[in-house]
Length: 607
Image 1: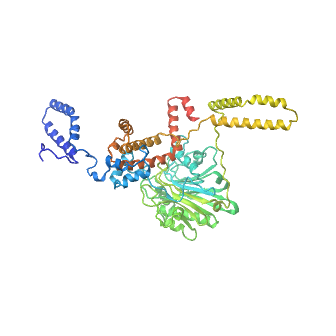
Image 2: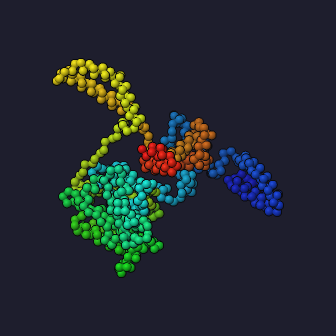
Image 3: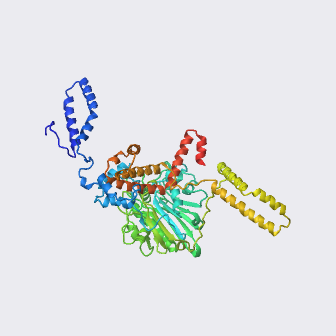
């Protein structure tokens, strides 16, 4: 095609035109002098502003650069027709109306390529633990716990540091233990050389919240601890919390001291004995410092005719057999690095001398479990329980980027089957509005009490009662004193309600939640614009520019709807974790105040 021939106005006009002019520019500039090239470039810059205007003027009305097949999209006119029957023009979009925007107009859901573009618009990478979104699998809901349940959680945490300050993973785990009401926690792959730490520096000391009762036991490779620092691949730990700590009978770890498993045993009423085990199976991995290679060196030193996987299986099975022979009930929290249903170790645990099955698959019979590693293809994490234990519910939780790359496993066991009895839960009282340690609240309370005393003439009534008082007091005086006492109590309670405002916020503020709320606000703003409602277009564009989402302004309605749904779901997930996110936000503010020498602000944040 001749370079000077006029091109038809089609979808790739901009691309072809840009390539044609670029090639022509190279051919023209290659034989020019340096001065001529500079002048030519300056001239090009001067005309650069005219080219987009000329190109836009050449397009037919209604043309969309992002879509050439308008039959598969909703135009603004179509949306106005669909929503024209709405009674309240200022009403917000409901979930049903969002579905109608997609379904009634025969709009096809976005393809995989569009999904990737949506992820990029929300600043999400293609494949990370944080944006690997999967639904909860199972019948357990972490926000619902039976008062007669023992909650057990297992997770491969992919390494945890034991410093107490600015430890995001430990802070997240501490929050989950309290928020989910976890009684027993099994951790795999602690990646910590506990021999390099003080004896008092344990997981319990890091995860303790206030005056909580908490105990922990850990295991790691004690045969190779020299000159390696605090990091050592592998390792396990068991954490026991709250009332269950009063029933601990014994604890221990694998006899070979390779960090294969650790355990706690409890003893309840009538000889009910239960052992909680956390185990981590090795998997083939390159490198001389891996958990797998640790076991290889041990096998070679001991002259054993086996391999790391078989050695682990034998050690776990042998220990469980010894406990089962003593009539102990078993809870095994394990990253097996093989399928939890038809893997070699799972089949062995299901045999008659042990009789243990994986709890989530027991709660969801006949179904294939989901992958529990974010890059895996099968369920390799689970909690195995003996047949005598009564299972209430079990689930694989969604991935949590702050806790590692494996899905947490949570189950509820009936307390009577674990301890042989039921325990009474201690429920702390709710906090009062009055806080006498805060001068502002205290002064406000006293001012309200004085005002109430003045309005009800408390001082005059006391004088009147004093004039009638005798010893012993008469029945009339007793009634007057009782009436006055009730009136003073009412004034005090009323003053307490007014001395401190409690804001009914749906979440605790943190920048991540605010960011996603702003994204939802922008997308809802765009949808209102497509509905034909009056909006401030200038403010909307500036807001989109601030959030880095200017692409959304040119997106079709169907993609905005899809993006809005995803943003709402993400915002709800973050709001559920708002206390934890708030704490991390305050950590950052506190460190910043300390580093810059703002002592008063640091003290205020700590309070």
